Length: 121
Image (tube, rainbow, N blue to C red; front, side, top):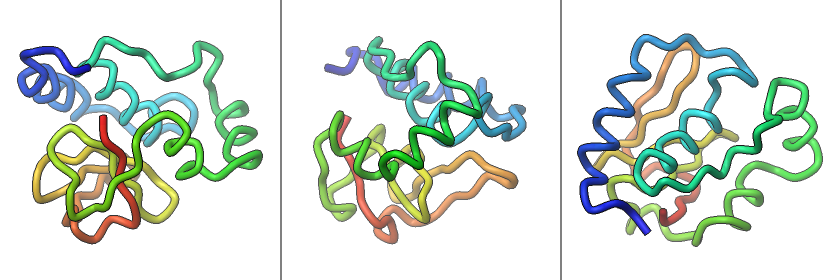
């Protein structure tokens, strides 16, 4: 369940990450996205051991979209709303409304309707 002030928490979280540089296993799409979930809900879904090596092993074991579907409710991108998780081109990001933001090198913003899948937070 999201905090009552989750929109403000999400805004503050995203603003706090603007200067971060993408580093796989340190600041990547999963850490950014699950950090947003943590900011909105207080629930930490990121394993404490997560690093580059572990991240590679987890994705090799099972695709990211399947892992997301184990934890979050899959929904159509047409119904994704602010604060939900978006999935596109093997990466996850945060839905910020009509667009979804993805951390990377460089960061990307794509129309939410173009997502391959989405997940309710």
